[in-house]
Length: 382
Image 1 (cartoon, rainbow, N blue to C red):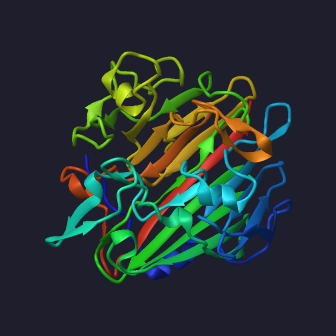
Image 2: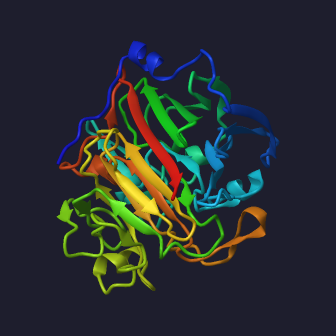
């Protein structure tokens, strides 16, 4: 199953992001300081609000979605993403809470890949592999930011220049990530990137969601639907085997609404690879939507709060991860600790280790091309 990379001309790209016009009533934004990094670099936060009580806060460190406040079925607003109250938490953290991930989301086997006969090495930061672009990926840099206002949305556009050779990747890569919030309770994350040398690229957002509220118990009773008939099985180091396996008859079958905890402890080798002690999900699902952003890719519902998260994306895959390695020792926002299985991620992406997997869609980006990705998180309560 191969999926085309989304390429767009510069003219068409400029039309994707509204940059003026009358702003919809109730949509507001502001930005203010969010402290400084350990080396004294100033970090800002951008707060986006709509007329329904939803609020998204983005910080320039790591392009992080630092907070996402969403009403429940009774109108009570709570923050549904895990994270920290200060920059230092993100600087020292290793869980990638809310971060913009690059250059290469997910794992690269041995941290290595080849382009045009040349081998490139990314520092290893996940056992024998590199994870999410290496130890100093996009999540560990301060991005430039500017507020944007559209006719029906408010947002912030972040930009970062990753220089040739950074974390071993070739090419000077210019990346822009735009977060925008509208009155449909949709948070849009739109990515573009260009390079001056052939490179590989796989961008995503690594927000951890708990629809009951960040730090409010586990997510095992929250009900997931993933519109994906296949997933990519992994070996013991979580590198795909290259197979595209059917989910039917496995714990990875979320084609129908299924509580996340219903099969999370099943005696299945893939679950043991993801979390050897207790089992858990940490796999790439090949979406049946095949890049059609108009089709629903995933739906997660919390029966207790009524909150529902629906995912739409142009990407061919999504990494559904159940925070298997949080253990109650991480103290997050408002002093809350984050326990085992206390959140899930929906990391829209091309497939893990794609540069080393000839049957997977290419993640190569050439000069003159523009990488694009569009992902929407839509919230409601019932």
